[in-house]
Image 1 (cartoon, rainbow, N blue to C red):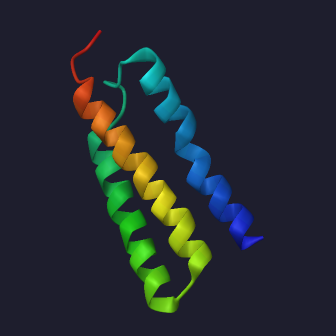
Image 2 (image 1 turned 180 degrees about the horizontal axis):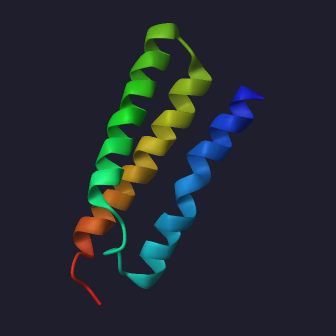
Length: 81
C-alpha cells in the first residue's frame, strides 16, 4: 500500500509537466511552490537513505527529477507566449 501511495504521489506532477512541454508556456507555475516542494522531496530522499527505505528513496527521487524538470521548463519558458 505504501509503494502504491508513493507511486501515485510521485506521478501527480506529470500532467503539469506534460502540459508545460506541450504548450511551451509555464508562467502559471509557481517557482516558490516548486522550489519548496523539491526541498521537501530531497529531505524525504535523505530520510529514506538514512533508513535504507528503498520505496521512499525511489519514489521521492523520481519526484525530485520531475519537479526539477518542471522548474527548468518554468525558467526556460518564462515570458514565452
